[in-house]
Image 1 (cartoon, rainbow, N blue to C red):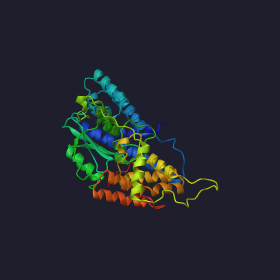
Image 2: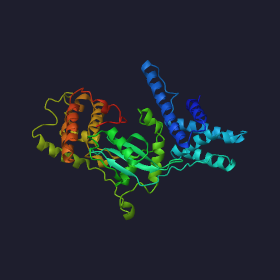
Image 3: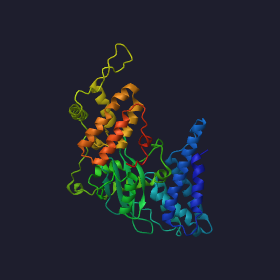
Image 4: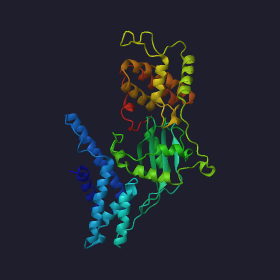
Length: 413
């Protein structure tokens, strides 16, 4: 049984059955919301099965498999109307197909786009409607005071109305940049206000929108194509924008509107350089030697499992801390520090290492936070929050709180 088709068919039928007052914009929004509801319900059902002890995921499908099934159902419904006695009464099928052509990421979008082209070539009464998802103006962005939370905003043409601004709320505190919030807003200022409300007043103090100054970084921050093993833990609103945020990101990357810097005219694209791990460690160790003189990284009584086993060296601990902190994908964030990033680091260290060695690494975290907040001249209130949180991570079995539960959680700093 095709479980994706089982859930796709009712969604398409409900959209097709909408009355004549339904607009193309309404259909697109309701399609996204419907996808979010179905995917969120699947997660809830899987969690319930797990809690009840029922195993097996053979009936699970990915967000892309659901979208493929919705597209197949919409294309079939649209072509069936070609032989209907009154094809002009089937505007609902056209609206769904046009919406799919606008929100589906490439290359899968070509199925809906080709179907629209074929139908327009065969049936004069196919409703008009744009399937263009290209941006219409220069993208803007801003970055929080910690340096790892971004708002990227760009205008796109709406069907039958004024341009709308699309927001990507991107959190790069983990190993990957994740879009934790997304959606359309009437203008850039309302999109910025929504982002500031989500990220928190301390994190976004003084943040202003400006043209994208580093298009190479922005292009990597924007979401890319997903596969079956998507991050997991998405909320219903995140699932609702799962596909559209990726399609619009593709359109923005391929346009001339992502680059608001002078690089476009000078040809001088500035690429991020890999972090020199040894230099990073040396700078931190030197700062720590001055900040905590005589404070050994490895205590003399560190327990070892075997009698002849040597305890870890100071360099071992620094190397593991740097390996967990530094990102090969985003070397720009080597010195960016937020409570959320500290939480994800601590959770990763606890999960990956034995408890004794993990505690060695975590004992360095308060000093790491102190060094980085000082180095980046973080504002006092933001610095205080980071340092306070970092102190708690070095306590054995301390509850790391909601910040460490999911990288996709929109964290209010």
